[in-house]
Image (cartoon, rainbow, N blue to C red):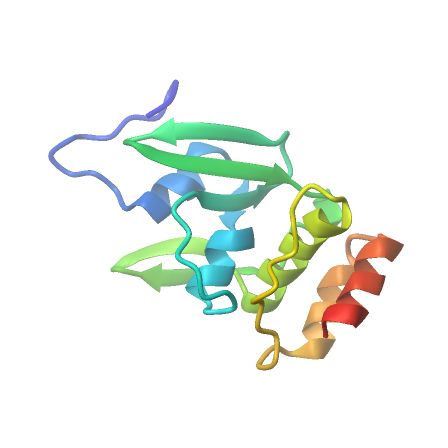
Length: 145
């Protein structure tokens, strides 16, 4: 799949497990996690993850995996979750939102107008946003929530 990471074609791992293993440390977040947690109505085909390493994109088994660099202090808010019988690291709904809005605040992503935030824990969202230590993100969070 990439240098030093192999899989048997007779027993391929799930695409989410591949996302966790392809570029470490990382956890599934941003648009993919927003879609998974039903915070956006769209189906997302690129698996997006947060990492403390440089931003990178890989293609493995005809799937695109995009990794976005976040600050080490903000590398939190994810949990191991069993999805389709496999345990993967994925952002909590609140953290997926904050990770996504961090890149919106940097003007590296456009704001999805169909974002749903009504069922999120506001306190958790603000705690995760504070970890980024970015005033623009906090202002955007107040506007969105």
